Amino acid sequence: MKVLVTGSNGRIGANLVKRLLNAGHSVRGFVYPGDASRAHKLDGFDNVDLVEGDLRDYDAVERAVTGVDAVYHLAAAFGGPYSNIEYLQVNGLGTLHLLEAIREKAPELHRLVYASTEAIYWDLRARGRLFEQPVSEDMVSETHAMPYFLTKWIGEELCMNYCAQYGVPSVACRFATVLEPSEFLTEDGVPRFCALHNAMERFRSISSPTESERETLAELEAAWENGARLLISRCPDGRSYKQEWCDVRDIAKGLALALDADAAVGEAFTLGGLLTIWEAVVPELAERLDTGYAEARMPNPNFFEFDHSKARELLGYEPDHDIWSTLDTAQAMREGRNTDVIPTGERYGTA
Image (tube, rainbow, N blue to C red; front, side):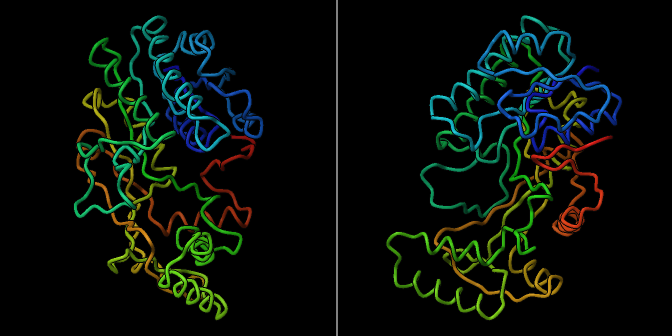
């Protein structure tokens, strides 16, 4: 098939392109002309043609859609210099442009796969994330924070409604926080998620700290002086932090599965699988990395995991990576060794 991938030079897009090419598909990448640092990431691959354009430009989107058999919509405004209005234009109107172009130029489309986010489950009104039961796809929050979370939810709603009303064969894949191994480690060589230094900076940034928060900061600084570099973060009630991530390679795997699973059309799925419980993982990391660790209660809870039964049953999705395989790859990339990951923000070279 000829497959359009919007955001094909991004951290997920490039790794998805590699998987699609390995499966025998040809790829058209739709890339934002302002993303110059990653413009040549896919130059070393055959069967890839790139189309520059902005999702807010309907004519450019229409040109990209013409002649393709399937579409992955990964491109979005995220973490860039955009106003709330621009976020809505890119993530909302841009998705609408894509759907209308599909209706006009690709009415027999095999599949549209929309990149959504775990943030669809986070309640704008809640402090932190605390779920006593695994989060399933029907637990979408009634509120969503602007700009990114809300505008990505709007895009998903557009795709699902165009599926129901116009027959656009849409699938939504909601990503857990994505770990790309080249970004996994700090400069000190420890995983970012449990880096003691990051926690110290968080407490230092509190504008009006409580006495308890000042005491916690002092304890963390003392641990740092004694050589500790890792932290077991705990919720305010003392429970260990628990969070589910996803290695970028497993995100690409789940997206690829959505291309051919007919039962997935009209459905949404959470792609995760890299479950991390701080009190279980950090001591092992400390031993492996030959460093010490501290413990601290954080201001907000972080305690959740996902229910993967739907993705398992309808997509056949099973993740391949855990915290240790991600760490192994991260260390290999740090040492300049070849891996199966296309790194973020860098030209990949040759296939």
